[in-house]
Length: 254
Ligand code: PGA
Image 1 (spheres, protein in one colour):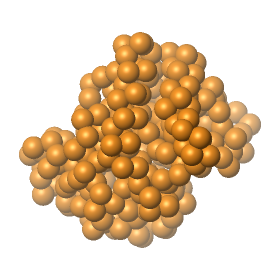
Image 2 (image 1 turned 90 degrees about the vertical axis):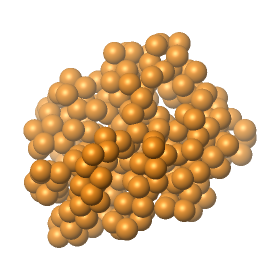
Image 3 (image 1 turned 135 degrees about the horizontal axis):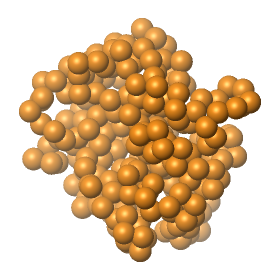
């Protein structure tokens, strides 16, 4: 079912004390609007801090997610964490297929589909990322590239897995550049993704936009019909900007 989400991806930033404080400040803001059920607010800290962040979020409505999980259930994979471990640490979500993992760890759509499958097997909600590179964008191939990613992930994960996932459209050229997609471009892409999902009856899932979302541009992005929230990197590292994005999303529901 389509719901609104604001997800903070802390990437490889901050350490324990700052993460605890951030979770507390985000929880306080959510708590101030405890009667409001949307958006669901999720913070994804680096894996050594998951357990601690779950503790810091206890008794609040903030949920904790991991930034990745392995596509196998267990085994000799030094440095990796499994979906079951993420769930066991108390997380509810896991990001899979982020473009930084595709780029730095050579992950492909098949592997990402397996990760999404492993996540749902243990009751986690996978946040599945797709998005075109700058070169593909300049070539005018954005819609086609993203459609292909969605179709491949769907084909390998199956519609049962994808219908319980959240999708995040993150144009690679917009991540960390300060150049967010325009609301028009985001809407066009999200509606194209939804049409692609429709063929497998998965079009009622939430589709988040990610890539240089800020307190300043959030309202116009959330006003797009097919944008169900945001995956936020840089602006999630500071509670004031992240809370402002959460509040913008809340206002877009009202
Ligand atoms: P950004 O990152 O908000 O810093 O652009 C978004 C992301 O990579 O999820």
